[in-house]
Structures are given as structure tokens and as C-alpha cells.
Length: 440
Image 1 (cartoon, one colour):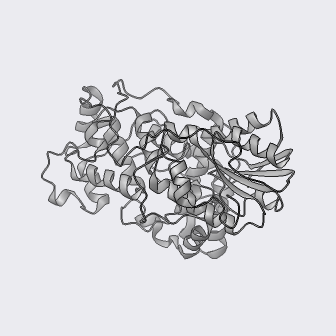
Image 2 (cartoon, rainbow, N blue to C red):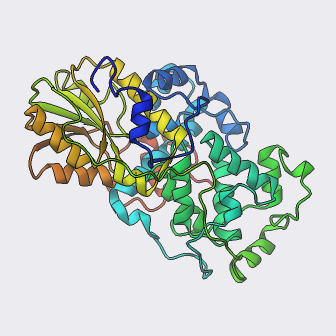
Image 3 (tube, rainbow, N blue to C red):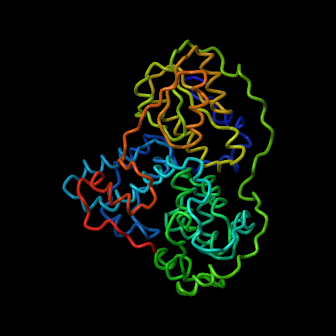
């Protein structure tokens, strides 16, 4: 489990992770790693982004999985594009405004922590919600071509256009009466870029617990922004075929739909019991007084904690308790494994390990084995990172390396429009003509 084979054979590691992922290993997964992230960034031109971003066929960057796992940073993306197109601010404005949503959502997570798992505001309607996802949704067989098409992309491809995410979230919350938390979990499990900040905030935006009103769509909206992908041949009774006032009355003044018990028929949930963690499963290691913990939101060889410690031992820990409680789809796991391969191949550090278990426990045991007294980690607002750091501090000196700030915004982040009005000059270098966008 040390270089040149940093985390052992993938087969052995996957066997160790049984019960932590959905489905069986497959080859057609998105390549992970900073090398691939940089290739995509350098090839991307956002010239048509502002005109096309709301359409499923829009000119998108597809960088979000790499941003989610820290293989790239939003600051890097911003600075690269501004340097590449220094005399064409209009080309970048809408893309950078959308990129700022990621920073805004991370600030919301930092402010609320685990409170983001619950409603941030009172719902703007009185309709009850259920904690059960309909079985036909889990199977991707609702009988509605647009919904089933989006579900297939979610389960099989692990990526959805933002408009498709909004449609599916609105369908589950408003048309099927499901709590937003259940949908957020489904996205975290299957999306390459599923995270605690953007994901939960977006679902709350749709539900209306982090927005002035709930978001919902109608058939015309789906047909327009999908290019008629499903509507032209659909023969189903369409629940979206009405104008917005009619749908508003139907969704928020009536009753919710009956729900089935949630199942796990998408792929196979591997529930075989894992062997107990063995503290001697690593083997002899060279002495190291410094240890760098690489978490799954800091997987870049340009990360500050790694750059500052080229002689330290390096470790990544798959959070077994969390993954057993909420398993990832296999493609998510494979993306992270690719990222680790790429990361370790670029690091000069002698000891590079991939472990499975409770992160704080495994890191503490590893530090003791190494003789390390200091643990380094990259700053991130994810609660599990913050909590792991606090647990480690009871026995070790922990150095948290700050990340470059995308924008400074010290007050509580409540609405993106107010945030963007304040930070747009920082991000763009000028104040845009209009910072407001309709909520539609």
C-alpha cells in the first residue's frame, strides 16, 4: 500500500470497500484526476456559455466533478480564464457568475454546518412531505419519458445538466411529495459532483426553504430547454402540461401523491460484512514526523498542505462508516480512485497510503506508527472534515492550511443576489450592469 502501487490493486481495495458502493465495477466511468481536470480546463472556451447554459445541449465546461473533489479550485478556474481572455470580459461574465454559486454555497455550508441538513427557512407552502422515495423513481420507471431519461442519466452516467437537476428535484418534491433531504441523498450517492454544499442548497432552493418561493416547471419549459428531446414522442399523461398558475394551485393547494417504500434496485447494494479494521495491515513504514491527510475535497498535487510538506507521509482514508450509511455509486468511487492514482504519481513524498475506516481513528493509528506529531490538512467547510480535525487535535498538533478565497463575504449568506452584488467586482474586476436574475 505504498508507492509504486499507492493503494494496492484496485480489486483488493474494492473488495475491502464492499458494502460502501452501489453496483458492480464497470469501465465506462469519467476519468478522474487533476491531469484530466487541467486538460478540460485548458480546452474550454465559455464564449457561448451565456447563450446556451440553460439548454441541455449548452456549451458547458463539465468541470464540476473536478471542482467538487478539489482536483481543481474555483480560484484556479477564474484566474486561468481571465488570463486567457484578458480583453473579453463579456465572454466570461456569465460563466464566472455561475461559478460564484459554488463559492456562495460553500459559504452557506461554513455558516450552518450540519444545520444545512435541515430546512434553513420555513417552507413557502403548507404541503406535507414524505421521507419515502417512490419505488418507481428508484427503478427509473415512472412512465414519464423525461423523468425516466433524467433518472437513467443520473444512475448510469453520474452527471446531470443543472436544468435536469432542477426538473428532477421539482418532480420529486412537488409532484411526488418527497422531502428534499431524500432527493439530496440520492444525488450525493450517484452524481460525480455530489457534495454537501451545492447539492443541499440547490434542493432547498427548489423546495423553497432557501428561496423566496419554490421552483417548479411545466411541459413548455421542459420542451424548450431539452430541445423537445422527450415531449415530441411522449404518449404518457403529462403532469406538467399546464400553465404556471394552474400548476401552482395544483401543487401547493392539494394533496401529495401516494408513495411506495424506497428500494435499492438501482445496481446491487453490497451488504456483506467487512472484516474488522486491523491496525497492522499497513506493514513497516519509514519514520516521518509529519503526516498530510488528503480528504476527498482536496485531491490536487497543488494543494497547499501537500506543497508545504514534500517529505511528509501522505494518507487518504475512505470514510467507511459514512459510506456504509450512504454508499456511493461505483462510478463515484472509481472517479476518486483515478484521482488518487493521478495525485500519487505527481507527489515526491516517499509514503503514500490509501486506507479504509473511520478517518480520525485510522489517521491517529497511522501517525502513531510513523512517529508523527503533526498532521496537516487542507481547509474545507465540510462538517466531517471539521469534526475529524477536532478529534485529531486531542492527541496531535493539527495544521489547517487555508485555501485561496474566491471572494470575501463576511456576513451571513442568505441570497445569492445580495452576495453577487457585493462580490461581483472582486470576481470580475468591474461591476456588471445588472446583478439580478429572475427566479423562474
